[in-house]
Image (tube, rainbow, N blue to C red; front, side, top):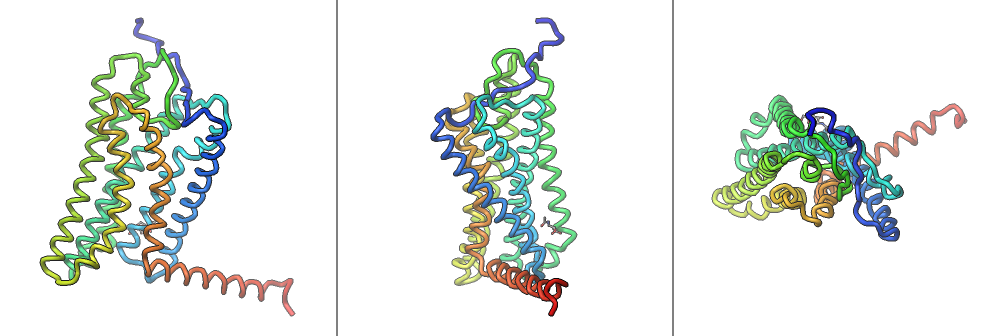
Length: 321
Ligand SMILES: *[C@@H]1O[C@H](CO)[C@@H](O)[C@H](O)[C@H]1NC(C)=O
């Protein structure tokens, strides 16, 4: 091989989820419903929390940030995939591919750290209630958020740095509906053993590590509560069960995709649907339908917007008496 100009491929062909026309239409309906519902649900959570001063506490600010991140998660691959369902050749440029991987890992990494921050917040609230507001001060919250974004960014850039200059010359068929490291690396025409190891350790370790930290922190909180406060266990469990559900949905697919990414399993691309679409949709469902405070705040927001419209209507020039 001559050392230059062997990166002849500039785009990839995504094979998508299925080639059956009927299933594609069903998938389109399914994705549209979930995508619209999760965007609206998450934006409603952000709006409610920002608008309602009853919810101006660290826990809700973190939840608003999680919802905000989830609108990003569901927008990275889903809109393109839905558009692609109707295209015969689902192509993505090399740049587009790298952009997708950058956002998937920056936002995904940030979300993982944010979940740890939220567990820490619950730990402080439940186990150190008297010091809660001093420990989780606004400054501390912003600092923790900055740490989350920084770790997400570093996690993503480190992996990208190793793959941006890979040469591609052979097949450009990617058996998936979006670009991600495991399949991307496989297509490069160099020996990729070292890179595969890098991705497995980096993405695999961050998913597996975060997952264990979170589970341990929940067990620790429940254990502390049971030991020190009689009768607090059920209440703590009900608070934490929302977190635990989110964590299982988010990390289950991630761990399977990254911890055993080589050889890539055919089931990977279906598991990715969970992280791309279903998990971002779960947050609003879990946090609003199960949470009295959120429900009350949404009711207030709704009533306020009704009043506003009524006032507006009565004062508008066309309707003056
Ligand atoms: C995220 O959290 C910070 C700090 O608590 C808060 O000021 C900000 O409004 C939140 N962002 C969103 C989008 O909710």
